[in-house]
Image (tube, rainbow, N blue to C red):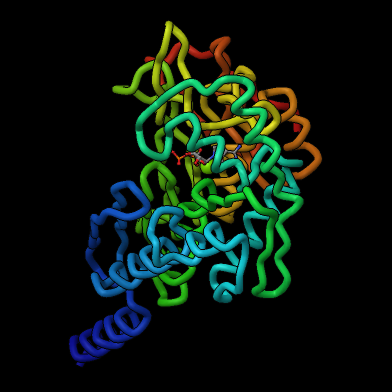
Length: 333
Ligand code: ADP
Ligand code: MG
């Protein structure tokens, strides 16, 4: 009698588990999207991971700057147009971050990024005259988004690449949560998005790469249900005449941002915000970034500077690696 009751309870439990899409085992799905390898891993049926992947693929097919069939491609070709509700929502998120960061993050920086060769890999150092001319067309404030209608001036081009991966991670995580998943780790090419915690309830541990040593990590941050996104000068760069030029641009100068931050990590609920802010804080430099953190709020950060300092906000659980030689400074609340 007792045994039967137990079996019944087990069955009911299994049914509820599968009804909300959870699986007893961890499944993993690797795929290529948005120019990078993504690895989605969750205690969920494989079909749910595939659903999450399809969300990423859908966002990419709308927002790619290079796919001729994408909505962003059409906007750049025509100087505007009417987009889908999905693309309007992504653009709205991106423009919100441009405004919040006062243009340190600017979706209209694309022509400048291209002039430096970062879109093709044919790297070059453009002249000051050339970047000055291109900067005439860089100004997110001149992009109009009215419902689903977009307009911007001739010569302007937009690129949502600085926010798309974070946005895609956020949407993929939301989909998994809606289907009852409570434990997942989504790696979108270095953008980490977590769903819930580890199956045993402990937080996910995310390693932050050591900007001085690509084989090693600078520290580990523990997060639950949040995203962690890092922008680093080491991700994509080239060297010419002893100078290093990387892919994160200062929209004020049209040149790679060089304000002392070599790695900026943002931790928050919203992956899109993390993605845009990691780029923006890298551009701002440590002092401005600290001021921005105090005024804007709602996120945590880990900044590594070229003077060997790691600056961490007090809300984070961050453990520096023994091997990494950075001085840790935790900001006052
Ligand atoms: P990654 O693309 O390697 O994940 P980021 O998230 O830091 O790196 O985004 C950098 C990309 O965003 C660049 O490749 C470039 O296309 C674009 N970008 C560069 N500087 C800026 C900027 N100041 N504002 C918005 N986008 C930028
Ligand atoms: Mg970014």
